[in-house]
Image (tube, rainbow, N blue to C red; front, side, top):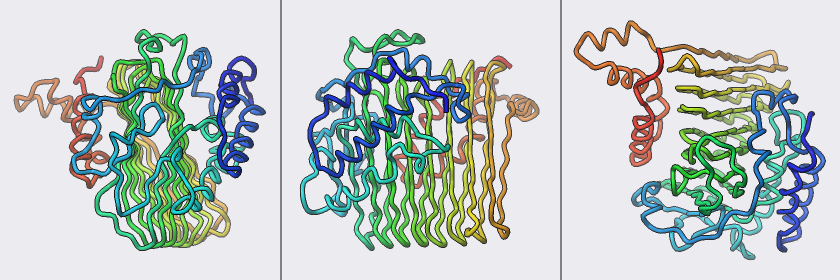
Length: 454
């Protein structure tokens, strides 16, 4: 693995050196993770898994600890859902005054985690899967950003759903970034400094439980730059559990966002995750689903809508380890101007995973001649009784459909927006929580400029 050592890693190691004390087991896991990061360094474009993700602008920036600040209600309002229990974090730190955790589950901030209650389960699972090691990585080496998060997260959310609990209302976890004014960068330029936060989420779904979690990543000032979000999430799905997860990424258009997500499923568990990306300048999401129980099911869907010079990279790996497991992946992208995207999905079927049913699809819609989409769906199958398919498409709007709409008196811009919305709406309408679906529809419509250069 080609790595970048030296000056680019030193500031992050300095951040680790300034950390305080904590439980011994967590301290050990942090130490192991930061040692992995120090030994591997940052990947370069010479590494196969990162060859299309150029980290140059991020590595040239000087990282610093995120600012501590109090958030105003007016800054939170655009991102909250009415009557929805919530945990709010500002620059990676819990904001109890803005939060209203649910009563039916144990939801605690990691920095406030005490003895008893959920503490034992949290300590057991936190960092056990997402620690930067090869076992949590989409390739065969260390995942630097999973290691960084494990070594450097200051606070986070731990949600423990009791066995048999059926939670009606979704729980929202809002990660709000609000860098100090001096850290904000001029639009379109690499910042001289970035404030770094390391959001951490752990969800433990008990046996036969049902719940939904909405993660929202956003900027208090949509035009602000000068920050880097490095999140990590772990989902532990007990036998027979049903867990729905929505990940809305609406960072500032000049922000860096590089994260990792890991889900482990036991017997007959179901994990359904939707990732929707609208913001960020340099974005990469690595997602891993581990179907470790017979009859388990995993759905990983996503939508990315990018324009300008935005770049988004989605890397996924779904491992089928037991028989009668199923997985579905559908990712759609809408790209305008000079935007670029990467989709790299891999379904890995172990020899013991007979009767596996897996499907992977990536579709991209280019609205500009300068937009570029890269798609690389992959299958690795070592079982002989399976049904697995994959495919991808990259194309432009149907000119006949555009002409049909215009012939009926619809203006070009409106017709253009209608067709793009029709392409993307499948993933927006998947949200069953009405306030969330309305929010996603508004964001999608707002992102459609009806332009393109033909």
